[in-house]
Image (tube, rainbow, N blue to C red; front, top):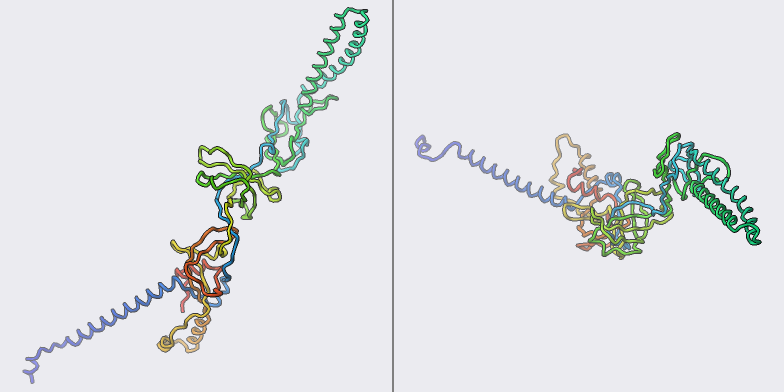
Length: 422
């Protein structure tokens, strides 16, 4: 018996090594199957998302359908609000003087002719005196002129005397007219005796920057006040050369104040410059703003505008319904009848230690109440008035419920930004 074992090729570790090899092969095969299954689930998660009813309500998912909308093809442009030169005044004084009083504040609305301030200059009283003296001399010389003319016509006095009176009368009249012109330009009364010069608003509008203070010396040629009439507010838009051929007078403009609210304001193009800006190589396009919307605007506000160049009826969805994933665009539709997991898998479910049967049943109920969504690729078109044109790559099911609010959250879920675990 001993010899039999000695002649045999039997080795005590052979069966053990074979068992280890088979076990390793089984584990490797299982891992490959698991990786294949995980890869399949990952690919599926890019197009399908599941939410519980609680998540659905919390997020506020809303669904709708494709609508036919009249959308505009637009050209985007940036620019500023502005007023015409005739609706803006820089107020200065024709004569220097000390600021006596200021009657307005910045932002105050003033009517044309309103006194904004007064300055004091003693030369003004001298102008008034000069004018009044000239008027008195004119009255005397006019009587003397009439008398000398009569005597000259009757050849009683030499004609030379009449010519002298006539010359003096003309000189006084010129002197009076010059003084009158100065006083009227300074908006000072012709009669009286004052050293105050009123600073008058030349147009109606809102007072802008005030560049003087009480007691300071106001110099000639220096702007003291700004007055702006916003009733004729318009836009100065910068349009690039490549888009210039599509722009024409009469086209509608929608714009928003980029640093203010996003309220859309409408206007219409009324003028196009015929020269380029040397720095930006753009052309200034002028658009009139609807008067009802212009009253609250201030000159110099930065705007982003859309110039409508065509109008057509297209299939559209609210712009929040279209999401971007990489280089592609998608919408999400709610799946009415989602396939349940095979019953075989349910039978193979293994309870963990300490897991109650009721907990498993409750989990199955939550899974049963899940709401499923599927991503569908689309090609977006123009965006206008809060809607985006969508072109379908594949036909949607009849009466498909399209997610119009919450699509971005579904995209995040598909990428693992808050995955739901079963």
